[in-house]
Amino acid sequence: MALRKSSDRGYWVSKLFYYQSIVYFYYNSFRFWSFTFFSAANPAIKYGGMLDDKKSDTYRFLPDQLVPVTLVTDRSQDLLAQMSELGLDFPIVVKPDIGFKGFLVAKLDDIESLLQFVEGFQDQSFIIQEYVDFEREYSILIYRYPISGKTYISSFIEKSYPQVMGDGIQTLEQLIDHDDNPFIDKSWVKQKWSADLDRILAQSETLRIDDIGNYSRGAKFHSLNHLLNDDYTAWADALMRSMEGIDFCRIDLKASSEQAMLQNEYRIMELNGAKSEPLHIYDPQYSFVRIVQDIHAHWVVLGAIVKERLRLSFILPSFKEGFKSFRIAKNIGK
Image (cartoon, rainbow, N blue to C red; front, side, top):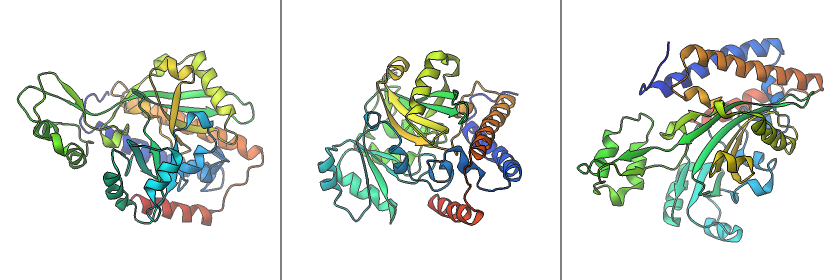
């Protein structure tokens, strides 16, 4: 059956991926006699990018010209001085160095907002990053078989940011309140637009109310898998060849168009490892059966890569090490 335009679809698909993945996790754990088998998917990243890996550690594998200006810091530092030293200016994007599904990510416009926002990080390190003003945001899941070196793409999506449309009658606050997108953090959005909440948008006038391309923040994902061809595979292969020790990852990037991306006119916001989801499954065009099949294919690929890395003598971390990392990752999301 197909689920279309359901307000809870995102929650439903996310839970399906999570629960179905638990089955494959235990299957592969017994298959490889290790609960940390996923570490072999990306030997260059801590635990393959599945647990408490740091985002800042992955940036060093990416070509410098493709990464926005990035500062890794914490609350004890003089943030403005550090930003000035790197030439970072507002607006900026702030996010935790270890994070999940857009947790504590924000675009900020001034130092007052920054100082207030970073209170939520407590003793954690966080990232301050240049805001990339390319109009379009994409995610692309790439994998490479380590023995043959062949590269493939299994998921390619474009993100659309949450927005409201005016009717010439309701205020911005009312439009936000009446929006039926269950993932929009309305309290955060109202705080962001506090100076404009009484504004009445004209008939058919649209306003983007958030700039973070995460499903958990109200963004929508639109599959572009139908566009994939040899040009995209060649692009992905060239990128993967510059990242030694990474065989399974999702790249989140911004560009002005798909063609600009293929011409290397883009910036990479994040590289996610073994915990990456094939985000096209959140597109309403995909049926329940197709989603189940694609999640299965996702784990088949991951298992095949792990098998090849083990044949190449990769040594998996111990259960004790992995469990400690799991507890750290779990506590961060609380």
